[in-house]
Image (cartoon, rainbow, N blue to C red; front, side, top):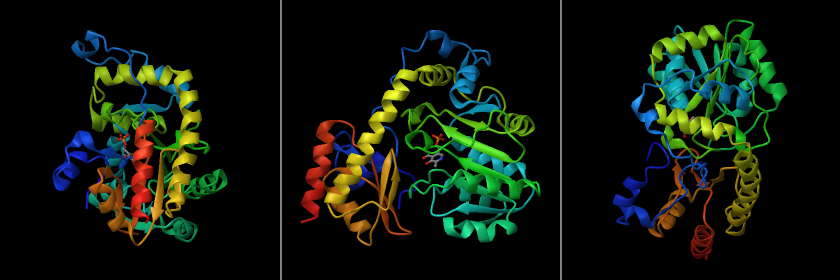
Length: 327
Ligand SMILES: Cc1ncc(COP(=O)(O)O)c(C=O)c1O
């Protein structure tokens, strides 16, 4: 089982289909990415500079100065467990597996939590990690739930970590606050909505003391000059952002309908992917792979995640394949 979506070269080898012939739907990355302006030579030549405008662009876009840029939100996922003594962390399950992996690797006790078990488990937790909306299930929480859990955890110096990698493609409200209060940590990514996963840029929002500890572990220049330039351009382009939000909403509905028509009604999703729980997940994954369509297969529970096709020809290709295998 592949650990992440997007491992197209491995699939190409396994199925003997050259990588350029595949339709890769295995990730939740926007198939119509923000296209950055040409990168100035200085961005390659100089050491990255804190005053280059990225921090201000990010503060304006996200609505808080209490932030730190990172080489992808993955960097924070790996570092945060190192900032607490051994404790008990409840982590949403099933979900993006890197959180549980990082907390376990750092020696913490990890409790896998389906959404309906969170309330009952909360009194036993020091840390609660949520992915909101969840990847791959698309599960969401109300603001009242999130704030209630935060307050209970904070009352005993606990943490609420909310990974909002996919939030721009939904109607959910971010937990980023102008002044981040103690014990609330929010992660954001430029990889999904902006479609810039290869640039490796994300942000962590938290109180200054915690940000200083993270910065200390990261050391200087953790985001490259070219990536900082590209990220800044993306965060400033309000027209692109507004148009993309509208487009993703429409395409999300289209994908859900297409799957429904093929008797694969989604069990959840968000603007960038749909999630289908089915005992036939592995078979369907293979049938699609044989037709050069790469989906993300999950074993527990048996399920498939479908990212959005991009071009019209890709939509038709998916439709034809789904019709074919549903016969
Ligand atoms: C829920 C979630 N959070 C975080 C990440 C890491 O993203 P990045 O490091 O590109 O910001 C991923 C990547 O797939 C993800 O699915």
